[in-house]
Image (cartoon, rainbow over all chains, first blue to last red; front, top):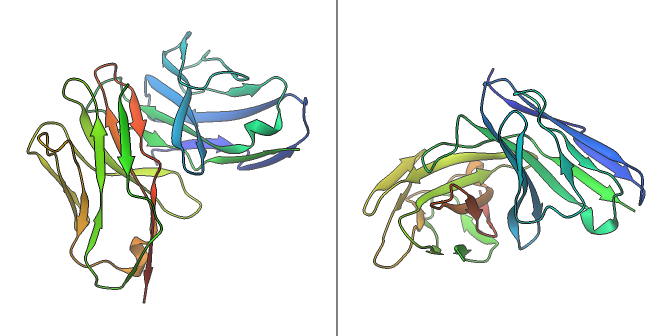
Length: 114
Length: 111
């Protein structure tokens, strides 16, 4: 089954404790991205990657890091999480970058930073 | 910059009622327009899309028409079901291939 998977689905952590949210897709997609969803703000892009070893900042990159060492994986790293990073996070992928390419979303990771 | 504005929710309807969720956009050039749906506890799924002016996207009884003159892409369905309860996001993809989302509209359909 074609899908985007994220782990963990739920995470509660404390300020400053480094964490990684994994994202993996099995569709051989080139393009992957991370979004955060906050009430009243819709989805905002954090980082994106157009291919292996090619990443770039989205609209809200502060406090996050990413890497793309393999085509299928695109982990999101929070080196020193803070309470304002409490949010619902989505990973997405698409075959390529372009106006007509559908993005496929993972199920989401709900992160709470206390 | 480019942006998408959706009507605020929640929208509460009875089953079989007519649905309209308004969406307007601001963009340079000719963006593609999308409606995504998010069911409870799940990620977003593409519902329908339109890539040029006057195109109509449709899926699962939902429709939306790309209106360049009014910069709108309103979502409609003639008869909603309880299973349509979800959050609906309007989005555009601009010339930099970036997907820009509206804030989402929650729909609640009561039996």
